[in-house]
Length: 195
Image 1 (cartoon, rainbow, N blue to C red):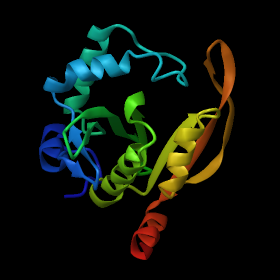
Image 2 (cartoon, rainbow, N blue to C red):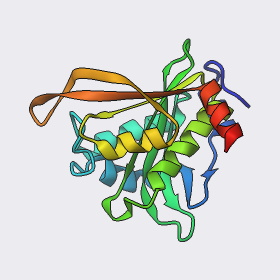
Image 3 (cartoon, rainbow, N blue to C red):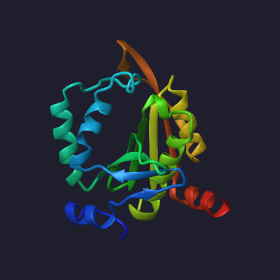
């Protein structure tokens, strides 16, 4: 089932929000049972050092993610290693514009799991999910200009750097630039056919 416009969010979630399986990882839909992990990860300022704001109130995080479970325009996943089911991080995809059929991806990985290609595999799974199941026309991603690891992940996932949003937000008390990446549906299918 492809999602083209908002339907009953509960119906959509039940129909398409499933485990996304890769070679080394699985993206498992966030449930209420994952909230402790999500709260710890989301409130960890070291993991989010490139963001303008980190919510440290775990109750607010729990409320936000509990609401997101039912929303039809956001899909949150736990990144689990296939070999031992270790919870390594989180991956997200949310709709930016329903009329433009545009979705944005994001991911975060605990430090001890970084450098093994798990974020790249997460990005690839999210992009495939967007084009094959969410009826996306475009998938975008953004990152702080100093977050070169995230920029590299998006480029390796087939996304093109579209530009730089100059002084887009404040981080650490200063205005910072943000890179903007995207991949179109036709580009995704061309890459997929060639690989």
